[in-house]
Length: 240
Image (tube, rainbow, N blue to C red; front, top):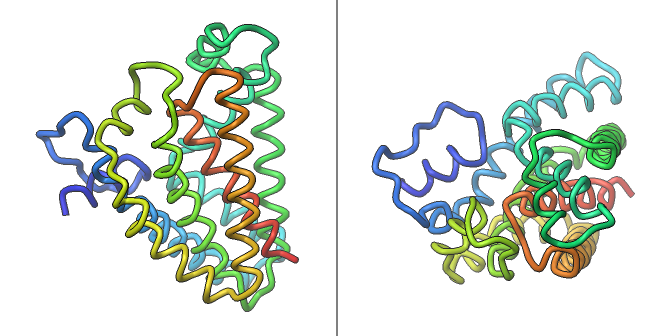
Protein backbone atom coordinates (compact mmCIF):
# COMPACT_ATOMS: atom_id res chain seq x y z
CA UNK A 1 0.00 0.00 0.00
CA UNK A 2 3.01 2.27 0.44
CA UNK A 3 3.42 2.88 -3.29
CA UNK A 4 -0.32 3.32 -3.78
CA UNK A 5 -0.32 6.12 -1.19
CA UNK A 6 2.70 7.70 -2.89
CA UNK A 7 0.92 7.59 -6.25
CA UNK A 8 -2.20 9.26 -4.84
CA UNK A 9 -0.10 11.87 -3.05
CA UNK A 10 1.83 12.73 -6.23
CA UNK A 11 -1.04 12.83 -8.70
CA UNK A 12 -4.01 14.13 -6.71
CA UNK A 13 -5.07 16.63 -4.08
CA UNK A 14 -6.97 13.92 -2.20
CA UNK A 15 -6.06 13.76 1.52
CA UNK A 16 -3.80 10.73 1.21
CA UNK A 17 -0.64 11.11 3.26
CA UNK A 18 2.65 9.94 1.76
CA UNK A 19 5.10 7.97 3.94
CA UNK A 20 7.29 10.12 6.16
CA UNK A 21 10.41 8.17 5.16
CA UNK A 22 10.08 8.85 1.42
CA UNK A 23 13.14 7.56 -0.43
CA UNK A 24 14.67 8.75 -3.75
CA UNK A 25 13.20 6.97 -6.76
CA UNK A 26 9.97 5.95 -5.05
CA UNK A 27 7.91 8.11 -7.41
CA UNK A 28 9.06 5.73 -10.15
CA UNK A 29 8.57 2.58 -8.09
CA UNK A 30 4.97 3.67 -7.51
CA UNK A 31 4.36 4.12 -11.26
CA UNK A 32 2.46 0.86 -11.70
CA UNK A 33 -0.30 2.39 -9.56
CA UNK A 34 -0.63 5.54 -11.69
CA UNK A 35 -3.37 4.16 -13.98
CA UNK A 36 -5.29 3.00 -10.91
CA UNK A 37 -5.08 6.53 -9.52
CA UNK A 38 -6.38 7.73 -12.89
CA UNK A 39 -9.24 5.26 -12.61
CA UNK A 40 -10.12 6.60 -9.15
CA UNK A 41 -10.00 10.20 -10.40
CA UNK A 42 -12.10 9.22 -13.39
CA UNK A 43 -14.64 7.54 -11.12
CA UNK A 44 -15.09 10.69 -9.05
CA UNK A 45 -15.41 12.89 -12.15
CA UNK A 46 -17.73 10.43 -13.91
CA UNK A 47 -19.98 10.23 -10.86
CA UNK A 48 -20.21 14.01 -10.72
CA UNK A 49 -20.83 14.11 -14.48
CA UNK A 50 -23.72 11.65 -14.19
CA UNK A 51 -25.34 13.45 -11.26
CA UNK A 52 -24.89 16.92 -12.75
CA UNK A 53 -26.34 15.71 -16.03
CA UNK A 54 -29.66 15.12 -14.29
CA UNK A 55 -30.03 18.84 -13.57
CA UNK A 56 -27.94 20.84 -16.04
CA UNK A 57 -27.37 21.17 -19.76
CA UNK A 58 -24.52 19.13 -21.34
CA UNK A 59 -22.25 22.19 -21.57
CA UNK A 60 -22.74 23.24 -17.94
CA UNK A 61 -22.34 19.63 -16.81
CA UNK A 62 -19.08 19.37 -18.77
CA UNK A 63 -17.74 22.65 -17.39
CA UNK A 64 -18.51 21.74 -13.78
CA UNK A 65 -17.11 18.22 -14.22
CA UNK A 66 -13.89 19.58 -15.70
CA UNK A 67 -13.62 22.04 -12.80
CA UNK A 68 -13.74 19.09 -10.41
CA UNK A 69 -11.18 17.25 -12.57
CA UNK A 70 -8.77 20.17 -12.31
CA UNK A 71 -9.31 20.54 -8.56
CA UNK A 72 -8.67 16.85 -7.94
CA UNK A 73 -5.35 17.01 -9.80
CA UNK A 74 -4.35 20.43 -8.50
CA UNK A 75 -3.84 21.57 -12.10
CA UNK A 76 -0.55 19.63 -12.03
CA UNK A 77 -0.64 18.40 -15.61
CA UNK A 78 -2.11 21.63 -16.97
CA UNK A 79 0.84 23.46 -15.45
CA UNK A 80 3.20 21.12 -17.28
CA UNK A 81 1.32 21.68 -20.53
CA UNK A 82 1.56 25.47 -20.17
CA UNK A 83 5.28 25.33 -19.33
CA UNK A 84 5.93 23.11 -22.35
CA UNK A 85 4.02 25.44 -24.66
CA UNK A 86 6.12 28.37 -23.45
CA UNK A 87 9.46 26.57 -23.60
CA UNK A 88 9.24 24.09 -26.45
CA UNK A 89 7.84 26.64 -28.89
CA UNK A 90 10.40 29.31 -28.07
CA UNK A 91 12.79 30.07 -30.98
CA UNK A 92 16.06 29.55 -29.09
CA UNK A 93 18.49 26.83 -28.03
CA UNK A 94 17.61 23.82 -25.81
CA UNK A 95 19.25 25.33 -22.71
CA UNK A 96 17.16 28.48 -22.98
CA UNK A 97 13.97 26.45 -23.58
CA UNK A 98 14.62 24.48 -20.40
CA UNK A 99 15.11 27.72 -18.46
CA UNK A 100 11.77 29.01 -19.75
CA UNK A 101 10.01 25.77 -18.80
CA UNK A 102 11.39 26.06 -15.27
CA UNK A 103 10.18 29.66 -14.93
CA UNK A 104 6.94 29.86 -12.93
CA UNK A 105 5.68 32.79 -15.01
CA UNK A 106 3.31 32.02 -17.89
CA UNK A 107 3.91 33.45 -21.35
CA UNK A 108 1.66 33.90 -24.37
CA UNK A 109 2.21 30.39 -25.75
CA UNK A 110 1.44 28.87 -22.36
CA UNK A 111 -1.76 30.87 -21.93
CA UNK A 112 -2.98 30.00 -25.41
CA UNK A 113 -2.16 26.31 -24.97
CA UNK A 114 -3.90 26.19 -21.60
CA UNK A 115 -7.01 27.91 -23.01
CA UNK A 116 -7.22 25.58 -26.01
CA UNK A 117 -6.74 22.49 -23.85
CA UNK A 118 -9.59 23.47 -21.51
CA UNK A 119 -11.89 24.39 -24.40
CA UNK A 120 -11.24 21.07 -26.13
CA UNK A 121 -11.89 19.14 -22.92
CA UNK A 122 -15.12 20.97 -22.14
CA UNK A 123 -16.53 20.58 -25.64
CA UNK A 124 -15.50 16.92 -25.80
CA UNK A 125 -17.10 16.18 -22.42
CA UNK A 126 -20.26 18.00 -23.49
CA UNK A 127 -20.40 15.91 -26.68
CA UNK A 128 -20.00 12.46 -25.11
CA UNK A 129 -22.81 9.98 -25.75
CA UNK A 130 -24.79 9.68 -22.52
CA UNK A 131 -24.54 5.89 -22.31
CA UNK A 132 -20.76 5.93 -22.82
CA UNK A 133 -19.71 8.92 -20.71
CA UNK A 134 -18.69 6.99 -17.58
CA UNK A 135 -16.38 4.40 -19.22
CA UNK A 136 -14.92 7.08 -21.53
CA UNK A 137 -13.94 9.33 -18.62
CA UNK A 138 -12.48 6.35 -16.74
CA UNK A 139 -10.52 5.36 -19.84
CA UNK A 140 -9.16 8.84 -20.56
CA UNK A 141 -7.99 9.39 -16.98
CA UNK A 142 -6.30 5.99 -16.61
CA UNK A 143 -4.72 5.94 -20.09
CA UNK A 144 -3.18 9.40 -19.62
CA UNK A 145 -1.37 8.23 -16.51
CA UNK A 146 -0.19 5.00 -18.12
CA UNK A 147 1.65 7.05 -20.72
CA UNK A 148 3.63 8.73 -17.92
CA UNK A 149 5.20 5.31 -17.36
CA UNK A 150 6.13 4.99 -21.03
CA UNK A 151 7.57 8.52 -21.11
CA UNK A 152 9.69 7.73 -18.05
CA UNK A 153 11.89 5.42 -20.14
CA UNK A 154 12.86 8.22 -22.54
CA UNK A 155 16.14 10.21 -22.30
CA UNK A 156 16.11 12.98 -19.70
CA UNK A 157 16.48 16.59 -20.76
CA UNK A 158 18.03 17.60 -17.42
CA UNK A 159 19.85 15.50 -14.82
CA UNK A 160 17.83 16.56 -11.76
CA UNK A 161 14.23 17.29 -10.88
CA UNK A 162 11.02 15.28 -10.65
CA UNK A 163 11.54 13.58 -13.99
CA UNK A 164 14.96 12.26 -13.02
CA UNK A 165 13.73 10.93 -9.65
CA UNK A 166 10.82 9.23 -11.39
CA UNK A 167 12.97 7.56 -14.04
CA UNK A 168 15.54 6.37 -11.49
CA UNK A 169 13.03 4.11 -9.73
CA UNK A 170 11.00 3.04 -12.75
CA UNK A 171 10.78 -0.65 -13.67
CA UNK A 172 9.58 -2.11 -16.99
CA UNK A 173 7.10 -4.36 -15.20
CA UNK A 174 5.08 -1.23 -14.36
CA UNK A 175 4.31 -0.83 -18.07
CA UNK A 176 2.69 -4.25 -18.16
CA UNK A 177 0.59 -4.42 -15.03
CA UNK A 178 -0.10 -0.69 -15.08
CA UNK A 179 -1.53 -1.11 -18.58
CA UNK A 180 -4.14 -3.69 -17.58
CA UNK A 181 -6.77 -1.11 -16.57
CA UNK A 182 -6.70 1.07 -19.73
CA UNK A 183 -6.45 -2.03 -21.93
CA UNK A 184 -9.53 -3.59 -20.30
CA UNK A 185 -11.48 -0.34 -20.75
CA UNK A 186 -10.38 -0.06 -24.39
CA UNK A 187 -11.66 -3.58 -25.06
CA UNK A 188 -14.92 -2.78 -23.26
CA UNK A 189 -15.44 0.27 -25.51
CA UNK A 190 -14.99 -1.84 -28.63
CA UNK A 191 -13.62 -0.58 -31.95
CA UNK A 192 -13.76 3.04 -30.80
CA UNK A 193 -11.85 2.10 -27.66
CA UNK A 194 -9.09 0.49 -29.71
CA UNK A 195 -9.01 3.54 -31.96
CA UNK A 196 -8.79 5.73 -28.86
CA UNK A 197 -5.79 3.66 -27.81
CA UNK A 198 -4.01 3.96 -31.16
CA UNK A 199 -4.50 7.68 -31.88
CA UNK A 200 -3.23 8.93 -28.49
CA UNK A 201 -0.27 6.55 -28.89
CA UNK A 202 0.61 8.29 -32.15
CA UNK A 203 0.14 11.65 -30.41
CA UNK A 204 2.53 10.65 -27.61
CA UNK A 205 5.07 9.40 -30.16
CA UNK A 206 4.96 12.80 -31.83
CA UNK A 207 5.34 14.63 -28.49
CA UNK A 208 8.32 12.50 -27.50
CA UNK A 209 10.07 13.00 -30.84
CA UNK A 210 9.35 16.72 -30.72
CA UNK A 211 10.63 17.17 -27.16
CA UNK A 212 13.73 15.17 -27.93
CA UNK A 213 14.44 17.44 -30.90
CA UNK A 214 13.73 20.64 -28.94
CA UNK A 215 15.28 19.93 -25.51
CA UNK A 216 16.98 16.55 -25.82
CA UNK A 217 14.48 14.47 -23.86
CA UNK A 218 11.73 14.58 -21.25
CA UNK A 219 11.13 16.49 -18.01
CA UNK A 220 8.39 16.48 -15.38
CA UNK A 221 6.59 19.15 -17.41
CA UNK A 222 6.62 16.88 -20.46
CA UNK A 223 4.89 14.21 -18.38
CA UNK A 224 2.12 16.72 -17.66
CA UNK A 225 1.85 17.65 -21.34
CA UNK A 226 1.51 13.98 -22.25
CA UNK A 227 -1.27 13.36 -19.71
CA UNK A 228 -3.28 16.32 -21.01
CA UNK A 229 -2.68 15.45 -24.67
CA UNK A 230 -3.75 11.84 -24.14
CA UNK A 231 -6.87 12.80 -22.20
CA UNK A 232 -7.89 15.31 -24.87
CA UNK A 233 -7.26 12.96 -27.79
CA UNK A 234 -9.08 10.11 -26.05
CA UNK A 235 -12.14 12.24 -25.28
CA UNK A 236 -12.24 13.71 -28.79
CA UNK A 237 -11.94 10.32 -30.51
CA UNK A 238 -14.70 8.85 -28.35
CA UNK A 239 -17.15 11.66 -29.11
CA UNK A 240 -17.41 10.41 -32.70
